[in-house]
Length: 73
Image (cartoon, rainbow, N blue to C red):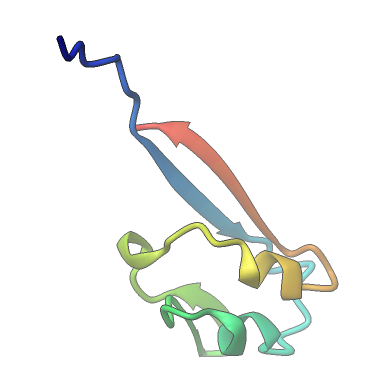
């Protein structure tokens, strides 16, 4: 007999520290879903819902300006 287990859904929250960011655009180019964009001298999330949480942008940032945290949805 199949017994479903309790599952929790999580969502990934990304934040960008503008004081640490050098605006090198490495993260923008590395994002496979093109979630990040550059405008008005700052990097911002174009569509946060599309972020898969792959952490590629975070790994490309040498200044550690991008951080991710996972929370229960």
